[in-house]
Image 1 (cartoon, helix red, strand yellow):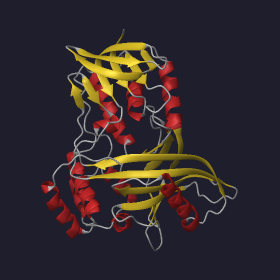
Image 2 (image 1 turned 120 degrees about the vertical axis):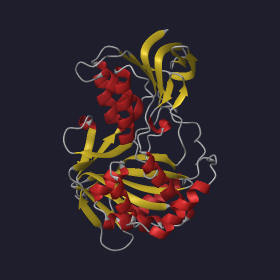
Image 3 (image 1 turned 60 degrees about the horizontal axis):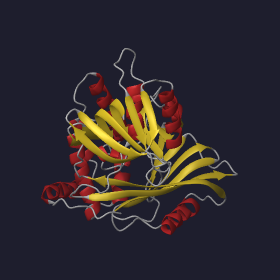
Image 4 (image 1 turned 45 degrees about the vertical axis):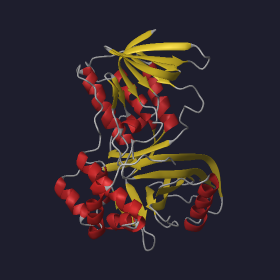
Length: 398
């Protein structure tokens, strides 16, 4: 049996971030023994993916893994000229999960006290002072880990009951062109020149990593996902008809589904067992962005552990933000607002840097009210009045 102060299940953004914060603390901080359990290669291990977030320019904690960053962002309305803004002092950053994993595992390997193991977790059982994990290696060998605290970052089997749940689902192509067609100084954050679905919204997304390379995605916020052929058809339309790309090579793909829900997520499942990451409510309901929420949550957990406090992962998004998100999700799901028009109007009337601070929950009440006045006020007030009366129902799945 292995024993540790902390056991972390799952080696995605949340599991790796927490292990990194515990293994590589600030000088003079208390060091804890850590076991990080990652599923062996196969269906339980998440596929490679891309994470995007914004933070102040300068040296970020994970800048060595950043593939590209931008301070100019552009939003295309369904018609008319695009909206472009400089988000300084922020930068919009992109990290590919393989680069992030490589950076973190290299750091973990340089420090003693952390063991990174490949094993499939079968059970997590509570003990009077901790928990015991039963797992199996890829070769079928039994593995038992006992820890004072356990943090589980594995995806949930089903979503909690919610008043509204939409799915942010997407497919992206990493493309390479012969001609220099991309401007690496600016990213296309939302391009609404795509056919809009009956419920929710759709948009294109372009992250140039050089004059000849970019990640081009088609994204929908809607109740159900598409088939593979439908995603590819949407991407062919976007790259060809909208962007005018007629000759390019697809060097890679990514596909994902992110729940956008006002459901409450349980962050504790036993006296010493907690959920972190998307399973612990780190995803911002109205946008699907998760990486920044993960960093807030894991930083708070690591600090609590170092100080000897009970490490309940915090809800990384303020209650006021979650309440506003619930209203927006209902307005989109019910058709009270046109999604493309709603976001186009916001980006037209509010500086992008302020909107990004708002989406991070870092604006003050008077700023939130000011942003709210730039939305369709009557439909949003109606949505706000209806949300408290909506029943919470289980989500049937994508």
